[in-house]
Image (cartoon, rainbow, N blue to C red; front, side, top):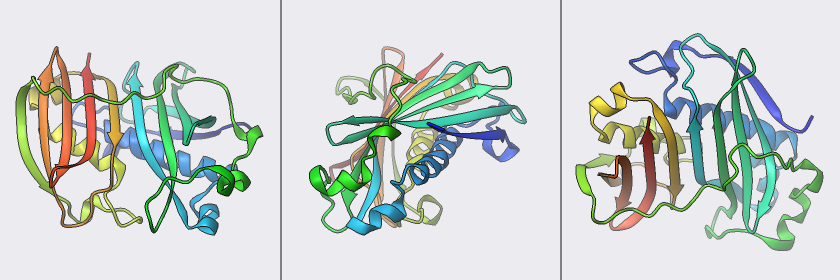
Length: 244
């Protein structure tokens, strides 16, 4: 087996006002199946504790060909595609009951030292890099890009979110899925409830911690939406949303 797959019936608590899978819920599922797959190939969080390290998600691009609905049965698969420098590339596909691919995603991960927050690379990672675990198949052909936040765009939201209990996961910092929720909450309701998401691209710069205040600015340019989160002028994340 060269990948991990989950069969899921989309539950009510994962859908939005239109009874379709929330974007953040897709990311939650992707996060869970990634954990399952790194366990399978011997690169789990538990394995990495041997070198005092953890996985950190750096970038992700999710493309929706179609957003699945409440109670729909789907299969979500993921696999390790190999390395690009210090980045580990992970791919995802979601298929419907007829075998049609409805969501595709690609992500870039790094392995970071827990204490000094430095990216690990080289000989220290050799015991965890299994050449035969990589699958060359692409979900999206291009790696997730770096987002350039437009400085000359129309500002449509400028707010502050204080990181609270429900944002924090077992790593004791904001879970990656929450940044998508914060971003969508900052966009106009007529967009988020009246349009289908086509693409989400998100870049992560650093973790946000309990009690920290994150300034969130959303802008619109050429029909696309960009969101940036900052804390004391230090960038936390940048996201881009395209609606069909």
